[in-house]
Structure formats: C-alpha cells, structure tokens
Figure 1 (cartoon, rainbow, N blue to C red):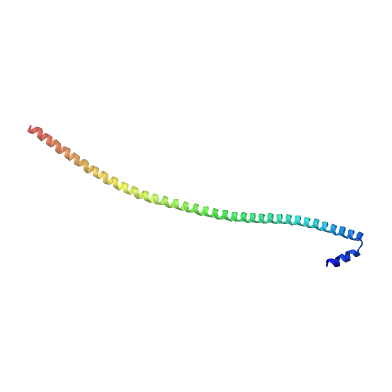
Figure 2: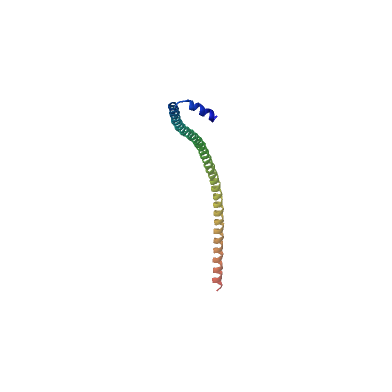
Length: 141
C-alpha cells in the first residue's frame, strides 16, 4: 500500500502536494476547533443537566419535606386531641374522686365527733369518780 501511495504522490507536482497538505491541515485544524467547541457545548449541557437534576431532586426533597411536615402536623394535632381527652378524663376522675373523698372525710369527721363525745362523757364520769374518791379520802382522814 505504501508503495502504491508513494507512486501516486510522485505523479503529483510538489506545489500541488503542498496545497493539499495545507488544505488537509486547515481541515484538521477546523475540525479540532469544531471538536473543541462541541466538547465545550457538551460540558455546558452536562452542567445544565446536572443543575436541572439537582433542581428536580431539590423539588423532590421539597415535596418530601412538605409531605413530612403535613404528616407531622397531623400527628401533633392528634396528640393534642389525645392530651385534651386525657385532661378531661382526669378532671372528671378528680371531681368524682373529690366528691368520694369528701364523703369519706365527712364520715370520718362524724365518727371522730362521736368518739370525742364518748371520750368527753368518759372523762366527765372519771372526774366525778375522782371527786368522790377525793371526798371519801378527806372524809376518812
């Protein structure tokens, strides 16, 4: 092959070969500039694509965050209702328990008053007996 190419090139004048080489060289340079430009454009498009993907993932993250916020707000609302229900339940228990406790305290108060009366009567009887014994001792002396 190189012999066939060599023979063909030897048939072409040197001026013509120089023109062909310069023309080919210009085409190569032009192609390299186009390739460089295309590479820059590809890089730019890749950056733009990455930016868009980032924006979309950012939007997805924003959507996910909004959904998470909605779920959290719903949970907070549910917990607040549970708290209010529990407070109401405890108030009613305290009121019912308070009335029950009040009744127990009244009963205990009544029992203590009765016991106090019995003890007072007993003390008075003992004082009377002591007075009789003191009088009897004085009378016997």
